[in-house]
Length: 220
Image (tube, rainbow, N blue to C red; front, side):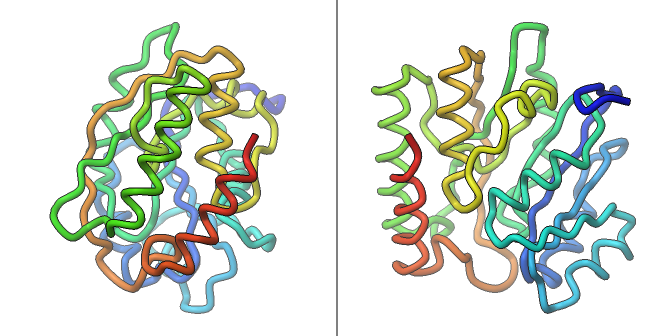
């Protein structure tokens, strides 16, 4: 099998750092028949052991950063479609089949537009998300209103974009790369709820949000 050969089906990539408490609920909601790769990105709470106990394939990525973890999972996947979502319980894996069902030969990626329940997304995170989505629409003509927290992509086309961004700027770099490559990207509503355990590394604090914003602004 060459790097870009693909098998039928869907692999769900879940980048994780210290999500041992939330992960069981996320993994139990993965649709039947989907493969699962949990990428352990420097966890100290037993995340990898929890994932293995639930039957997921575990990949270890030593380079810190969301983008590094996602890329490691994508590299390890072998199915035609690759889905990515967080392991904190804020997104419902049960909504993935609706996104997968949108694929036809001309569709390259389907992304979720988060519809947050009250209290799920802090004001500063909403503002940042709006600003970068507006930039994508205005500068690149990409018809999106969110930065693709949940997404499903054709693996071969994703790999063809190369390594995009090692840290929090990855989702924005992906959408920018997709626009430049002329991808057809569809956006569909998904539910966004408070994470089930712990605090978000990004939206959980102004410091985390500002760090992520710095990463986003580094994307060209």
